[in-house]
Amino acid sequence: MPWCPECDAYRAPSAVEHGGACRTCGTAVERGGLRSLKVDDELPPVPWSLKVLFVSFLVYLGWRAWQGVDWILGRMG
Image (cartoon, rainbow, N blue to C red; front, side):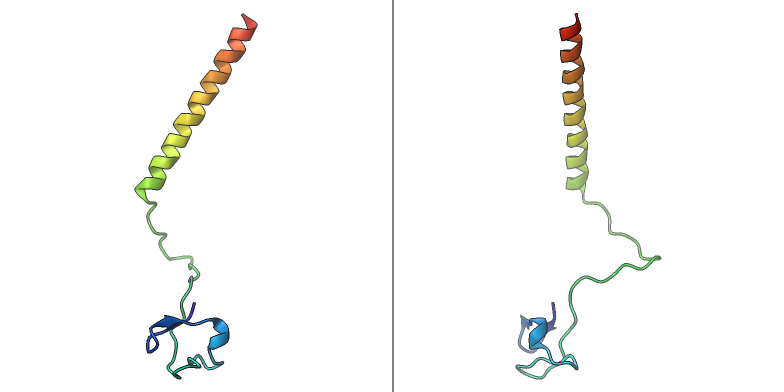
């Protein structure tokens, strides 16, 4: 989202002139938002909390798989 440093506020794309100026104060707005990654850009590191969530999800799926195998063996025997 475009940011106007003079007004200290985000501006809707419709509130920005074609030249990139704020309609309220006329200052050039800073283009915000997501930037596209290039081929040589490094990806940010994966947060530790996401790693913990992934490992706990794998442990849970392993436990449920073991319960399924145990149930099947119990029905057969």
